[in-house]
Length: 363
Image (cartoon, rainbow, N blue to C red; front, side):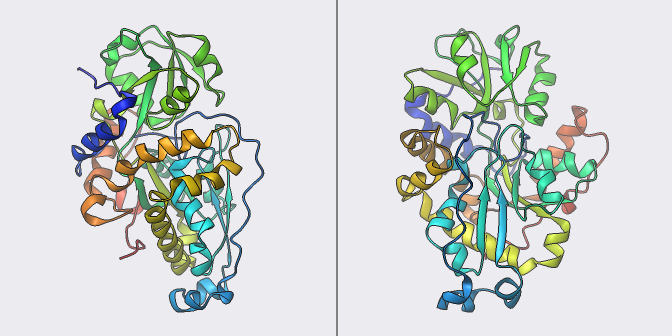
């Protein structure tokens, strides 16, 4: 199969074309919020929203009595380091949208050694992020997590390589060293489908080893690492996993079954705020990225600004273009489950209608 290369100069237009072809067909990833290995995050956790709901006149009108009386403090666990893929949450924090909904939100950074799904399932965070395929795998294992919104409608997950390498198809990757994120279904699916034989090394969350070996591959996001590399004067291209026909919802917002049952109005309030956050973010990315940078000093703001442009068609493309932010379709979840079963990445059927819900999305 011929694979489209992602040329950085035309990244945004290619992303739009990619999403236009996604429609409602299904196909994904696994550490939580993003496969993109980033630099280590040395920043302290972000501050909570500045004002409680009771101080905001609009909050009492928009927020349920449960949200305002019972649950002011909300913890959000990122699936990766703070990056533009979480722009909606950071915009909601900066602009006070969480506070307007009666929520005092703390955002905690993730990374390659942080399993956000387990943290959410254990009740140590109220919301987190996960790939749709990982949600299915985790539910098979008995982890009681539920996806309540689709943040990225398609997957920018890819194997990234140095520009100039003779790579035109997935088969051309054979024999190369791959710095990968373990436990990611999309990566395993592509390996199985094309019978790839790679010299695998688990990523350490930095670009150092990839930069040292020009023939190597880096498992990440086409919307992230190539842009960061370009900021360092290194040209890179990417083979999108979606070109293999595997393209589930790349990032979903998750919560636990118990939190969903006990605090439905808080879930609705959180999603209303995040939806407003995303609407604000793409028109004011430079402003919000300054705040994101406080939690990830190793990612330059200039790179974040370029990443934001690349992410927009992933957030608002596909079904979201017509039906609005966060939409998810049963047929895409079902198709993804089928692919996981065929690849041996699921051992038994999983009820997709228990794995996700759109009931709490803002109307």
